[in-house]
Length: 263
Image 1 (cartoon, helix red, strand yellow):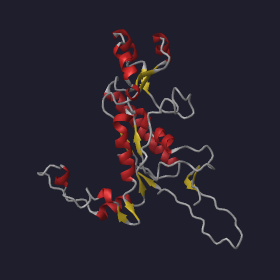
Image 2 (cartoon, one colour):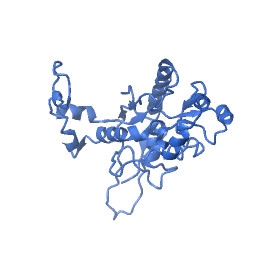
Image 3 (cartoon, one colour):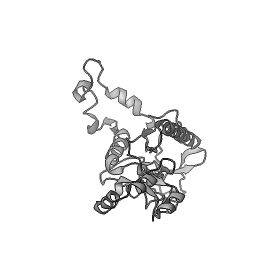
Image 4 (cartoon, rainbow, N blue to C red):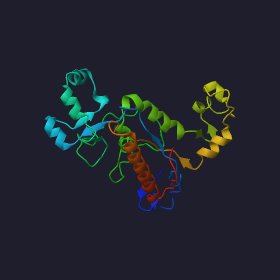
C-alpha cells in the first residue's frame, strides 16, 4: 500500500516505484473522498479550556498561563483551587485577559504543544480511517493523537467530551464495510424513530440503509471541537466561532477538498 501524502493544490498524492518486470505485484494507494462535511462540536458553559495573558500571568506570579483546564483537576489541584483567594480567582478568570487554550504543534510543548494538550488520548479500540499515524517515511509525520489535537479536541474538557468526540469520529466514518452496513448502525437504521426517543406527535420515517449509503458515499466527516471564551458574551464568542468555521472551510478547499458547509 502506497502512502498518500498531502500535496499543495490537491487533496493527496501518492508516488509509485519502478520494479523489475518479474515483480507483478500491484501498487495501490487509498485516498480520502474529495467531499468533506466537518462536524464542529461546541462544548457547554465552562467546557472550554482557557489561558491567561502574559501580563496577567506575571501579575499573579503563576508558573503557567492556565486559567481554566478542568482535565488537570486532580486531588492536589482541586485543593489548591479551593484555596484560591477571591482576588486571585477574579484576576485569573478575567474575560478581558483570557483566551481559548488552542493547540499549536509548533509552539512550546508545555504552553501550546503536546504537553499542554496531553489531556487528549485515544481509546485502544478507537478506529477512524481519518485519524491514523502517518507512515514513518512521511515528512514531519504526525500521530493520530496529534491530528486529533490539531482538530481542537484539546480545547475542551476531554474527560467529559472525549468519548463523544471519538464516538462521532468512529461511527460517522465507518458506516459500511465491504458494502454491508456495520452492526453498530443497526440500532438506528430501519428503526422507528420513536424507539430512540423522538416525539410521537411528529411523524418521521425510519432512516433506510439506502439513504445512509447515499449520504456517506464519497464524503468524509471530520470531527472538530471549537472552544470559546465562556467568560465573554455569547455574541462575541459566536462571531469568533463563525470566523474559525469560515477559515476551516477555506483551508480545506485550498487543500484540494470540496467543503461547502459544516454541521
